[in-house]
Length: 493
Image 1 (cartoon, one colour):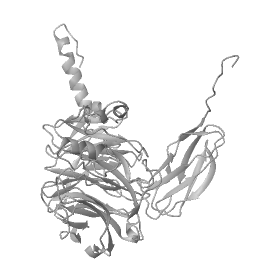
Image 2 (cartoon, rainbow, N blue to C red):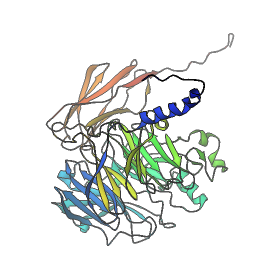
Image 3 (spheres, one colour):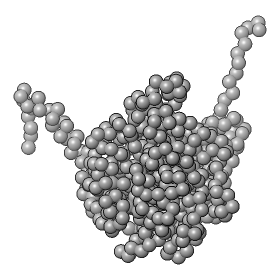
Image 4 (cartoon, one colour):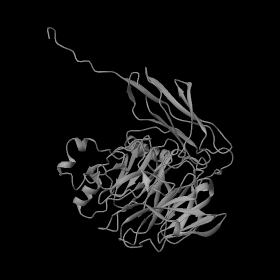
């Protein structure tokens, strides 16, 4: 059929264009929600790093249950130490160590009873199919006694095998909010990065590369309530859903290994001026350093953004590489392409009442959690399987600096994820496409190289294929020579 635009019909052109764009942004294939089970106020779901069929569901009241082959069994009971359920208090999330299948180590984030609102990050150890409360030891305790809300609560192991923690600003007064989020001397309103001591002798150490010194666990700051965040398995980037106060919900982005970002709260709320915008600390050079969100939407009719994951499950046709997110109050699941979030944002025509979290298993399959009791797996028209070498293994390469003095050495770090069964494996560094050196992965699946730089070069890291993981190739990383600045004297001087 041929459509001819007349003088009358041309006024319909904007509407036709809008319709075409809407159709183009619509989901390419239907995604459905498959029930996993019903639970008591679930807040999070994760899987065994070495067995995607073994799920762990966190219940707000203080229990963790496991689901495997349709059977639901108790795993850990923390009800005697978890403060629930005033305000936002409760058991928020669980993170299983990359070596969980051998060490039994996992970590929990909850509000404690000793001082209501106080945030605890604790390590526990499983033996067989359960974990006793007696194995619990505090790794980090963060005072949070003014308000039992805005607690953050996400735990996640990063691509390099280190533990990341989100904390809320903990304040109801705008000056408390400003101080907590913008100060580097308090752990509230932050993303933290630590290396828990597996021996139990020390609580944790601050990893090399943390941006604010060897004793400061802060990774990024200027956040209000980063209730959920995640890592993109395809690139290693971090995405943070920061819950707004009155006007905007925001999603923040940090590229692989990018540390020290200040996301602006409460000088800023999303893309708007925040309640403390007139404070001297919010102006000048500080304001110019704020990292703008990559996506915002209005707080009303939403109420709390729930950050999801970049989809790496090829079974979700039309969603591969897209970032999924939702909102606690609307329950609508949406997605966008990271390259152009605003233009590609769309509804996936899926609804989850009281959406509290998304989850991702060891195969990259995605889950959605309803605070009313249901946990679902997102399923597409194609089967999602874990057979053969895993598709989710990734390798990253970062440098302490992108420019170094001629003749000096660069410090390059390779990190491989997931870490299971890879400790001691070789990784190879390529320089301008040619083999430079081989190192073996340490206990957190990282390897370090110190090539001497005499001229600009491009580096890339590779990890071999084995029975579990496919071969992995990092992105290319360019190191440039830092040229000295010469001072020119005037003639005769």
